[in-house]
Image 1 (tube, rainbow, N blue to C red):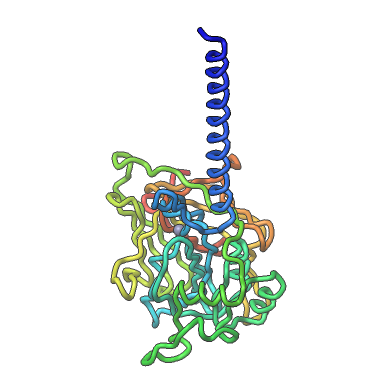
Image 2: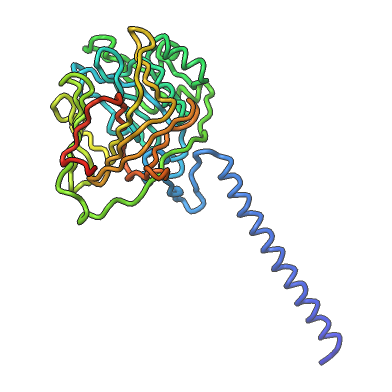
Length: 353
Ligand SMILES: [Zn+2]
């Protein structure tokens, strides 16, 4: 072969390799840039292939988009007086806490992350233990005023607060329903107001641990839970439904339904927290949600005994089994029932001792 021709081929080969390496470097840099931009936008959807990135809601474990899973939790105080039931929008919450307020009535704290609700309420006032639970999720807190201790807790613990008295446009009142039971809101109203105020959209918090559901052949025929908070009107029951592997909720002896859909509330998990309870003063309960205690976790028609712990307002509630391992929940809505250590909780069939 002509030496000059051979040299030309070697030069061409070298140029080819250099060109290939340059193309590879440009491709890697371009991909890294897209990923970096994606990370910098909390809640942004992955749009490179026109599809949102699948993700898991940290609070209820449901498969959703990263845009929905990365949203900041919203925690809303909801009334549970027997005369105002059924409420609206509870079925869209990821987790709902129920606890006594005063005079034997209960109130609810509903936490929303991945799902939107066009109407939620009636919205009522704050108490310190709900404020602590909301702070544990780094949530935007929606309520209408509060007890003296509740309002102090909001200031002291640095809550991103959307009190109706300060932000009336985040709520509306419904004609034909007597005040104060006529106050309602929506996830979009709360998120829009939070954005206008300048609260961060994406925040860090722990979330819960999840597992796969037990297979149908392992579901027991029945499991009933009865919680006697105070009077018959506030008695709570959950009846396990084998086929759906969930717990149908009853309150005051009636199916607890959603006002709009008429569907019965049907969580996948029910957690009982035994919580030391005293009085700040004759008008205000002191439910000690900062601390630890025993708990029962119901899912798959079975019960797991364990302990709960919440070290401080800014840390989330954690539930662990008797070996100190976090108890995983089934994916879907969870109701957490906060009861006094001596509150009667009945389970049928009886729990194994
Ligand atoms: Zn969720």
